[in-house]
Length: 275
Figure 1 (tube, one colour):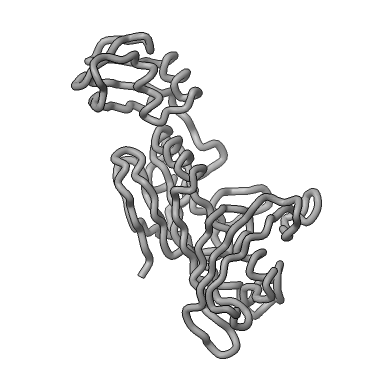
Figure 2 (spheres, one colour):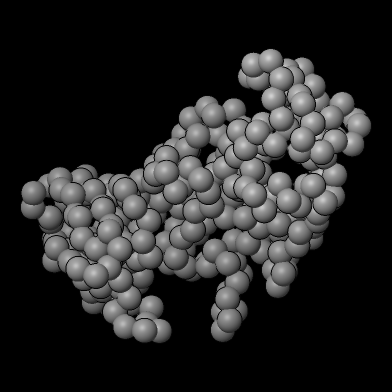
C-alpha cells in the first residue's frame, strides 16, 4: 500500500477536500482509488466532502501496484539526482528503457527494480531508444508520476541532447518544424509528412570534427525518433544511423545531456546535466 502524507496549506478559510485534491495534481483515477482504500484527515477516516483548512494532516492510502513482467537485474546504475519523489538515471547505449517482446538485453527498468526492490513500480516519465544514451526521469510514486506527466503535456520538461551528424548543417542554428508520422502501418520507421503530428526540433552546431558536426539539440515536442527523422530531413542524418542514414561501423551517437523540470512536490525548477 502506498502511503502519501501532506500538511494542508494554501487554503483560504475552509474548502471541500475534493477541491484540495485537485490542486495536488491527482488524477480522477487516483482519487477514486484513494476513496476505496483510505483517506484520512488528522488520522480520522474522511470523505471527499469533508471540509478542511490549513494545518490539517492529509493521508492517502493507495492500493499496491506492480510492474508486471519486469525482473530485477543487479547491474551498475548511476543516479544524477534522487529524492523521495523521483530519480534521474543515466541509461547507457545498447540498453532499452523497458522490456519488450523479442528483446533479451538488460533494461533500465530491470536495473531500477534491483535498486528499489520487487514492490517498486517503474514509472519512466521520459524515455530513450535503445541506442540513445543519457538522462531518464523516473517517478517514485503515482502522484509524482501524474504531476510530471502533466508537466510533460504542458511542455514544461526541457530536454537537451548532443548528437554527431553527417556533414555540417548550414545555417549553424536552426529550427525544424515538420509533422511526423509512421511511414506505414506497423513500421517502426517515421517520416515527415503533412498528415503527421507537429514536431519541433532546434539544433545548434557546437563543433566540427572532420566532415561531421557535433550538435546541441533541443526538443520542443516529443515524437518517436524525432531527432533522427528531423536531422535526416535536412540532409544531416546522425552519423551511423542505420534507419535514417547509412549504417556505420558503430551505432549513432545521441545522448540526452540535460533535463529541466518542475519538482512534482515543491514546484522548484530542477536542472540535471551531464558535464
